[in-house]
Length: 63
Image 1 (cartoon, rainbow, N blue to C red):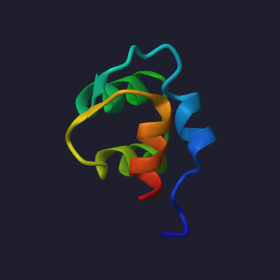
Image 2 (image 1 turned 90 degrees about the vertical axis):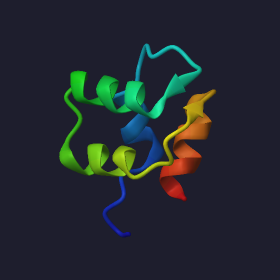
Image 3 (image 1 turned 180 degrees about the vertical axis):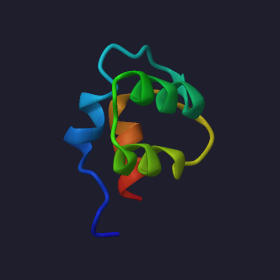
């Protein structure tokens, strides 16, 4: 997908989240931080599991 946000854009909206974090927590934090639809769509597409670090979220998004 050409419109997938880059990891830096995504992490900007996840600042302050405590890991490990569930997909639900990650998506909610992004919403609370004002993430745009592209970021929210990317995060909603990641597998529903616990993520132990920002890099794990970035890897899941980049697929």
